[in-house]
Image 1 (cartoon, rainbow, N blue to C red):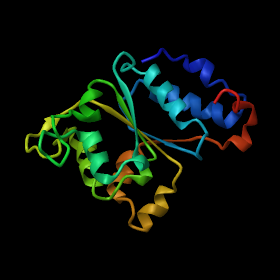
Image 2: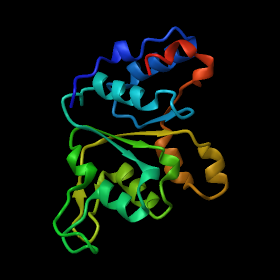
Image 3: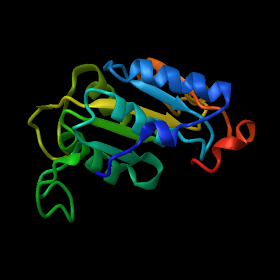
Image 4: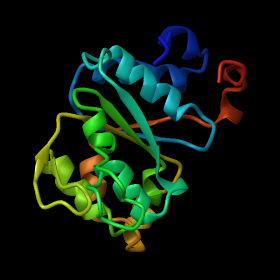
Length: 191
């Protein structure tokens, strides 16, 4: 993983963005789950990388899973891993991103698109730090900090029953709102 100069990449003259960066710096050393909210292209993943870099987990892996880019089955396997023979094409054991990020950070990008079928499994991991690989009955534990990002109005998704309310509350421990780029055009070049 390339070294990341968070101060350079996050330089902003916008007071709202400066407040978001200040909050990110303050919570980076904690283990709190962070929910980064903002429109597409506003720098949510850049701020997530900065939080990881500023944390005590910086020497450990940082991985990003884009929730809308995979089917529910592939997303579950990517997140939790699978064992050989769990499904067609599972020719060997795969540990999954949670195991691969042991001691580090996992960013769940566009968490609002997480399929309902996976939401209870993620909730269990957030509560207990336990999970099972697809096709395996062995319970595993992992020490991974979760960051989540979304452009979606999660409160509306909860009201429409497209997103679990209990998962929303687990993810919304420390929300950081990132202002849209139209309010901070000076940041476009940095991003």
